[in-house]
Image (tube, rainbow, N blue to C red; front, side, top):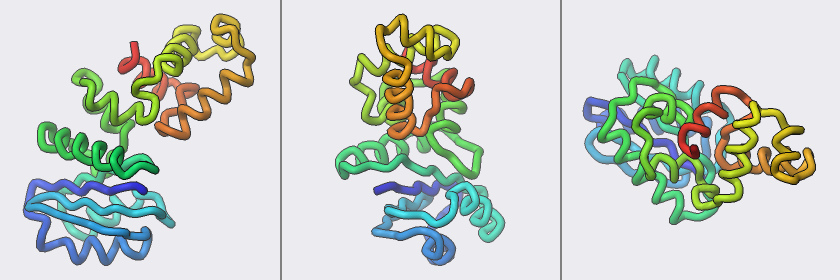
Length: 188
């Protein structure tokens, strides 16, 4: 299950029916809840990118709105934990982007990362010291799979498989410079 978190400076209550009307055509809504200036929608499937939906929302609502797209969570407890972290971050920090995911969040907060942001971004690998060491080594060897694998006493394919698993869980491909840079800053 995933969630979308909508945050605006204004009262969102009047716009909920419009948001749900636009969103319901593209995603499979399970449930939603709102407060004065935020809305959370839980869903399992989306037929379009949330980035596109964010642009539609802004043009339809004429509203300065930020939409955070979460990772996929199999465990409902982890999903609720991630939602609380996102709510706290958005209450403490103004995020001006219309579409927000963990990458944009890390870019905005790269100088202010704390444990809750690390937990949100690293997802299942938050407490996995072996994976952190693997990624750190890979990045310190300039993203060179062959040299990093030798240093880690792994086969190249094993290292590539680990990096792919990390990307599937976090949506960060550390083989790309910007993703590697962002992850390195929170695991160093």
